[in-house]
Image (cartoon, rainbow, N blue to C red; front, side, top):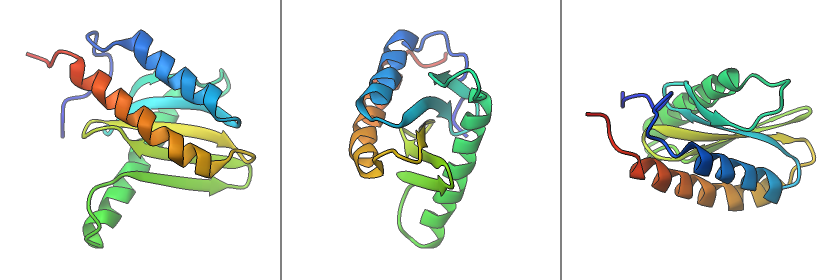
Length: 137
């Protein structure tokens, strides 16, 4: 397991926050975003007060774990994205890099196709930001 990103003081949190906010603003129906580690620990978020970002980070890691196993068992390669649709909304999880995941909570009215077109670019920018952070010694 890679080292956890949670609480890493070298991360560019203001820039990460701007990326999460931009995604929330760009796509109507996005209720909030979480950047979490594949270990299930929270890195950053812009969720409303009624949602627990730690729970969402853990759910994203669980979704990643299931998706990763599907890819391995079916010979389809590494995890890229998974979306869960519920009665009143969505949770979409996108791979950022080998350590991080982007989770997006959406209302039932969200344009999922537009989210799937936009979120991978955000995940790519987040990966670049995370790669630029100094590694632990």
